[in-house]
Image (cartoon, rainbow, N blue to C red):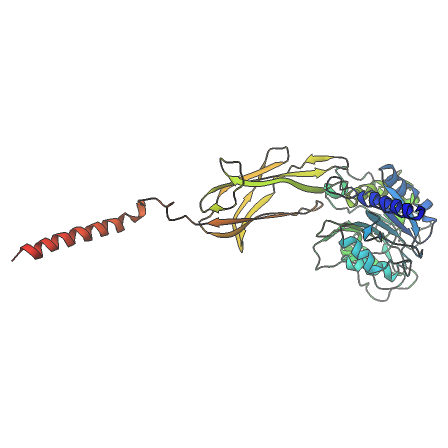
Length: 436
């Protein structure tokens, strides 16, 4: 009996855990799975983890090779997001592998992945599947002889001062970075065939990827502003992935370090790493840029009920509410670029929706003189925001036989010819019958 009660309690506890976190009413992640290849990272990167804890996240720290690792139990995921700060782990423990991490993302969960010099094949494979590729050569680092930090310990110019950040307030917030970002790590390139991954922190034109301990005898395979230091990916299911080529970027030392680019007189008392990391994690964990649609409806102009079928040339009104999550509550989303399509094989009607500054969007239009099964579609994709993909099927019928006008103005020539034929036949009949 005690064993049975214990089992029931465990199931109830699991249900409570699984019901937390990402949901339609509260999309912000809550419980985060943190994988480390060394427990010392918990202290060397303590300021970063503290910023997450202060915002209400529950962090579960594990060694990346722990044999008890698991992301789900009884078919339910135990975590809302994952952080992998284990750039050199050769094999994940437990039942975790590359496919398990990718399945975690495919199920709508979020991921932060940080690499470093000597990155392992496991981290490479996860990043590649997300559209980010690391330099395949061993022990390479990102080097910049024009934008390196003024530091006595940096003899190979791999401590880079970077300030080429993405201009997108939805991802990095409205406030500008107070200082450049310090970066030491490995460069990446983005898959040209993927339109889901975006560079957030780009290298300068003078940067290149190479092993500092080896003399360069040929041009490096990746160089210049094509190199991504930090990139993000938002999947089609709105799962978000942050991939950094530097683990040190999130460290206490880089958070608090002063910044001065070599050859420049400007010295910043503190780097922009902390604000950069905090704002990026706000976006990654859906504290910002998450949209949802509500109260989607359509009806004839002047009516309030939604009909089952429309007639050609009807006046149709389509409306919906679009809300944005600000980390604590839903707020009206305001934009002037939300469009609606009345679609059958191709758009017959394309209209921009107007809004009332309270998140209510609407548009009215005349149903085209074509009958069939149409779709009312809203496909809203904007950088940094969750994708809205809404679709409603709308049958459109022609006029019934008793719905046409009795006398159509454009048909008067046909009416005239018919009556003239009847009059002519009557006159001909009288002439033929009574004239000799």
